[in-house]
Image: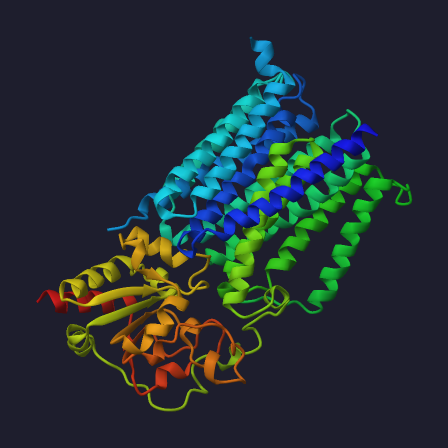
Length: 96
Length: 467
């Protein structure tokens, strides 16, 4: 029963977030669509949280930890690279 | 004190705070003035989420984790600082793929973790692996096409749709077997998971391979959405709200961009994904069907017309990116302005290889963002424009979209450059555009072709102005 209540709660959060996302992104002007995309891409690197938990789960190296470590590697490229490149682009948008 | 920072209430509050920062960061992207700060706000949300996670007592070993983290950091910094602005679509595609594979690996790690998984988690793992796998291989194919490692042409296999549907069905059945484990297959659940991963990777390739270069904006937007959904789904695997919220925001963002791109081409998503646009008509490439007179113009004569013009509209396309002409374009724009001429830039949503591609290139060249306009803003005023300069754009200025009901792009919203008093078309040759469709614009009375590399042609115009 407990896990069902949790599932409902998580689904609730999911649905509301999707609607919030639609509202937020609709207001982004087309001139910023590339930085929006790379910025959003960096946010999707949030999966790094799951990766860190999997990678640091034990002293002994198990397959699960190894897989998690690779996940950390890829997710951190996604996060660091994504935010930096977005910043590089946004810095160029200037009004005279 | 340390106990407090590790308590689940603190950790969860920090995740909520990180989610709020993501939301504000995206909100601040709605204006170029606040966008850069918005990105920093979003990045601080990510930093908080990472630090709080690292402090959790579930994490007992740091060696591997830190090596991976620092390795990823170095690669990320190098890639982000070395990439050229014209190669941005490739890089975004690649990063996107990395996000997808990371989510997939999180799902796998949780699956093979000896601690028992609940039914909901296994459903979420199956979904994460499915979406993550498609995102990864699909993004790699998109990366290959955009960086021209593989051909940008649509690649249609025999029975494409049948194979796709069959593979999707197999993937769903494998996922179902993982969830309810009937034992019919008589192999371990881990093996089933690995077969599932293999199938999703093939699915990603087959979904992206048939899509041609000019349709890439749609594909990147869609893959962007998938990477968000994969992260969101991974949130269900580890029961974590911040993954669900952040992933859902990205998923929604990608879907909106996908929709905008499809509308800008007047095509449905399924037509983009399965249509193989341009594959059937590409045989007419080379201009065999174009009839009528093409009127070439020299840069010297073009200069005389521009010198007398009061308003000029620049319409850039992928050709500007290819020849890296954005800096000389800006220089020409400034010289025209000094000459008392009004200069604007009209950017079609699907110009280039990703949404907003042209805007980034012009911003790089220091063009003020308030002179960048959308088709809807410039079309009503087109009759008053003296000269339109079309730089390496083709299909987005094709008058057939308005005039020829038989044209494959009929109904697509275009920039109506043919209504301007004079149109200069900078083009390398008379070859048809990506879609392989004839463009009657080149034959119009008021059209002049300025053949040659866009950068060289514009440099010549610039030097004419300076002498």
